[in-house]
Length: 144
Image (tube, rainbow, N blue to C red; front, side, top):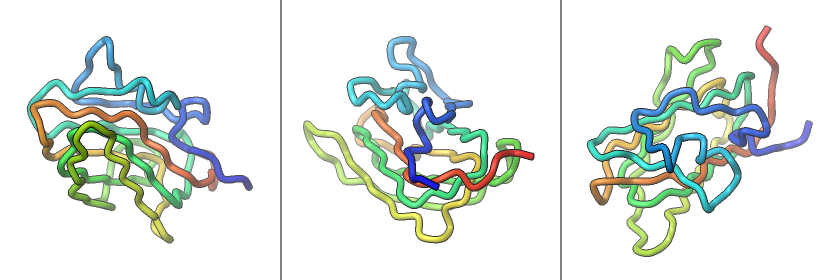
């Protein structure tokens, strides 16, 4: 099996929930593979979004490219529905003036998921944006 970016919409990933939406910067921009597009929050924190893979996957490496995100929590679920999330990763990101934050997370052996919930708990400004979510790994099985 080959490793792919599981978070790309072209690989079947879908953003099924986002707590804020701007018609010029919709949540789907995070998974379109284009670093010129992004999703932006509309103020107030926490903000969150859920990515559905539509299959069971094993994630080996996550890369989140964002701007103004201070605290990021990632939860995962292996259920068929977006329920029973468990805390997986929590990171305090470094503010990078004038350039994207590039947070890389190695998943080791605990990267099995069907859904990921990303929670932006706090930001360095009133708004934050996510340009790209990349999850390197492979499909383990399809829903039965």
